[in-house]
Image (cartoon, rainbow, N blue to C red):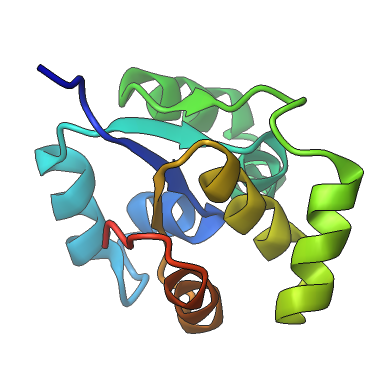
Length: 131
């Protein structure tokens, strides 16, 4: 019997989860509450998601809440610089989105994002979307 599916999260998922005013908050909160997936996030994406919380001196609390949801950082060596450059060349995405896309591909994982450009690039690359 196979274990849980791995889903790589984009920063937009964490941002939407923490901001009740975000247009995607309810959908993302439902996803995070109900998923049985193994949730992973690249370090760069996690840092991107924590910036607003750090600004209001809530960075450590936000990181603890993210960890409490079972979201874990992906290993730094999952993708190479060449993987990222190849992804950027093929998609034209900004580098933080390339990190998420290349990470999902390398981990043979689904991808969760609220970013339409990233979602399209993932779909075009044959990566299943979790959200």
